[in-house]
Length: 237
Ligand code: ADE
Image (cartoon, rainbow, N blue to C red; front, side, top):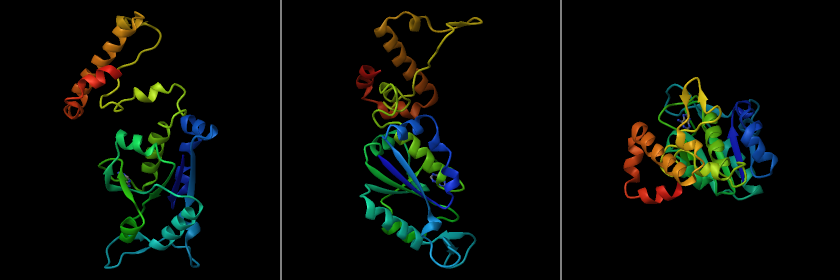
């Protein structure tokens, strides 16, 4: 999979993809993230990428021209399934959407800045808008990093133990169960006995029940969504 990220602040995205799982995905040739500086596609002496809003009002607006040029240059090289604009008024990003995007071959993520992009970019050049939550960031870069991370780790072969993505929180509509490691007894704080028993079926059913309990306590809204799917989940956990 290849993800091209278009931004006016490429420096903000230098770090996240150089470490851990995302770096391993790149090293294994499973995912490539390429960051493009929108200013490279700006024309004129000043290389402006933003301008005043027609009709007045505070804040600058990202111009359509450099964005269109950058998209054109990328699309000449390969086909993209989606051109995604990161914006607080987009569709809320969830695990299901991460699963769906992880099956794509080439994606473009466009990061907004200032007052956002000229509306014509959204109308004509973008295929999808994604928000990572109901809060406003200074720009789309951190949102793009979040989406990229959540998507790339789902590509088969990226995680060492492929099943570990399947047991993530949200993957089956439930929060993940608690996990423990050595020591089994830390100053009187003990690991649940069943996890030390080696009895796979009992461990699996303990984990499922712990997942349901935790989801009920912390995210009862998720349990409501799951009504009618309980048996399917029980088999999976
Ligand atoms: N840009 C600014 N805020 C954002 C958000 N919550 N999600 C995605 N992009 C954004």
